[in-house]
Amino acid sequence: MGKGDIRSKRGKIRRGTYGNTRLRKKKKRRGQQQGDKQEGFGGSSPRPTPPA
Image 1 (cartoon, helix red, strand yellow):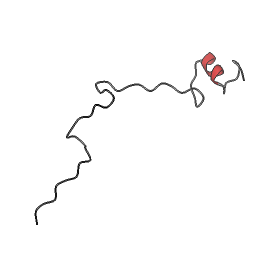
Image 2 (cartoon, rainbow, N blue to C red; image 1 turned 90 degrees about the horizontal axis):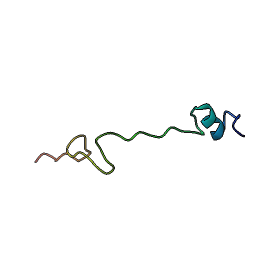
Image 3 (cartoon, one colour; image 1 turned 45 degrees about the vertical axis):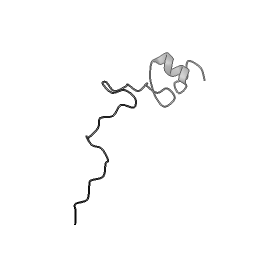
Image 4 (spheres, one colour; image 1 turned 30 degrees about the vertical axis):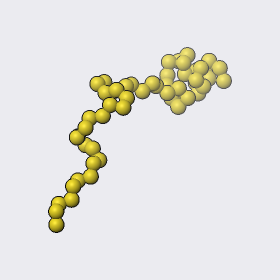
């Protein structure tokens, strides 16, 4: 379970590969910050019911 082991995190770092034991970092989306939402597009707001 050292640097020569392909399945361990150390082995993946040494070889420069990725997998279940060493995941890639997720990229942040450009333009939007955390908690920033656009209003009015694709929202799940309920439609008003038509008068009877």
